[in-house]
Amino acid sequence: MRLYETARREVVPFDPGRVVTMYTCGITPYDAAHLGHAATYLTYDVLQRRLRDLGHETRCVRNVTDVDDDILAKARSLGVHYLDLAAEETARFDQQMRALGILPSFAEPRATSAIPDILGFIGMVLETGHAYRSGSAVYFDVSSFPRFGRVSGLSRDEMLALAAERGGNVDDPEKRDPLDFVLWQPSLPDEPAWDSLWGPGRPGWHIECSALAMRELGLTIDLHGGGSDLIFPHHECEAAQSEAATGEIFVRHWMHVGMIRLGGEKMAKSRGNLVFVGDLLTTHEPAALRLALLAHHYRTELDWEERLLEEATVRLNAWRRAGPGDGALDAVRARLDDDLDTPGALRAIDEAAQARGVSEAAALLGVGL
Image (tube, rainbow, N blue to C red; front, side, top):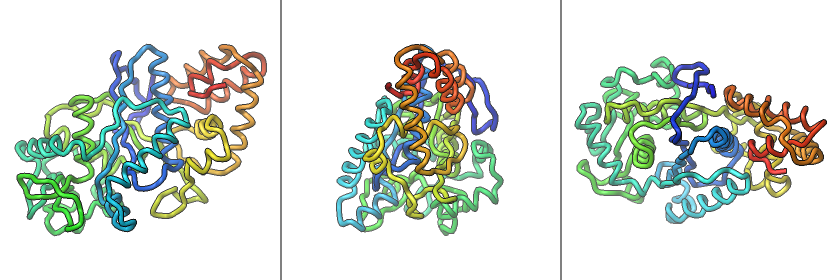
């Protein structure tokens, strides 16, 4: 199998051991699951299915960020406890992922379950000289880590622009460098707080995923994924703090999924232009939604249109008319091994379905006929 590796910026062999450890950044459960979530987790679902088909055991951890700025703000606006909001939205998300046929996670740990791990992790970063205290907060010192920027390949100016856009708080006067990022921060009066050596507060966003990934999967994981909007700052910061703390490679292979667009703009909660999975599942069957998303390559951006679901339904019905059989199975395996080429896999099944059954090939894509 060959997959694009973000840090190397090329398609390279992906040849893990028998047990493949994977970590995909999960949801911040303060709103319903949208198409971007579905496209991301479907990508790693198909990857796992092919790896299992090859004889591997996959252990894919998908976290739940149940404490951060977004969920606390939403809970405050609704007048509810943030953990109650998280529990409700996580349950709804899990139900919709099951409906889509997404394989169950090896573990789905919550950030709030890992506070002791996070505190110990921050202590390690401080002890190795890669972090500093300022006021009641602890920051990672990017100047101490020469490989900062390796994952994203961005210039300093590009990183500064994205950090400002994506909540990096580059104007924080407590920082030595605008790109330094918070590991521990004081809580506002109405926010949850935990005791620490640096004063009561709560963890920064990036440190949560490092602590959870290492707790569940060990110091080095085979593959780490998420949407391409997480490359910087989130995954860049994860890599830096993790490797600074342990001295070990954190991730062997970074793999990211392209964004979903609607009407020419990136689909995002901040823009209010989301298409929700739950709404689509009331009018179309899950297999059609899987096929609509698999018809484009995971690394490319997708301009979503309703017609994609209609085309997927026509395709699904054609496959079903072909009946059971192993048509196109080897061709689909070959396409998936070539940087998870799902559009090519679908075309191979279309062609085979004109003459023979294709149920086994469809099943490899998680589509039951």
